[in-house]
Image (cartoon, rainbow, N blue to C red; front, side, top):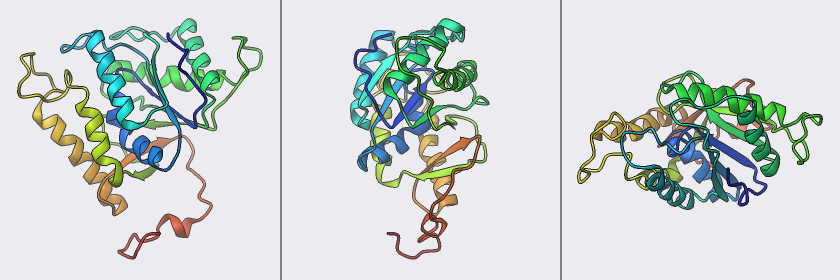
Length: 248
């Protein structure tokens, strides 16, 4: 782990592999960054088991994608692609980055998602985010427990707890995804085609965001799943403009 660049942020987003954060919540992060919210990204593995690309190529792509989204930092815990570690040592690494960044909100992959590493990452991040608040777990850093861990789905379709309007930031999300040139559709690539690199998969990213946007009555949206529903200080404002009126 390279933690030298980790700094306090309001949101900390974890991805099992480089590009998962962009897929699952890149639009929301970019939209929030446009409003001044700070965030960092933690990749749990280097994606070294992927059919296309190399860890070195993927690291460069991930850095460029983070720049496009507006991340304050991006770091990699290198916990083993294809068999993501969830042991005590892995938990402590996640605890340390949570304590260093001290986020209010943690974003993590949904446990029901397609890849087994997403299932492992879900439990690892949720558990470690809780343990980070235990004062008797000594790491040399002050305890910190985020207000909530919220989950994103990169592949499966599940009813969201809440939606985030990403219309104004959707082009930024797509640009960040295209930075991962080795992974997604590239007609000039000589590497084997995979499920993720197919043209249909990339077109499906927009279709998914449009479908969620229709629910929210916006152009594009991303959905999130929380163990508890968010509390709205102003439910009237939350639905302002839904039936066609002007939004504030």
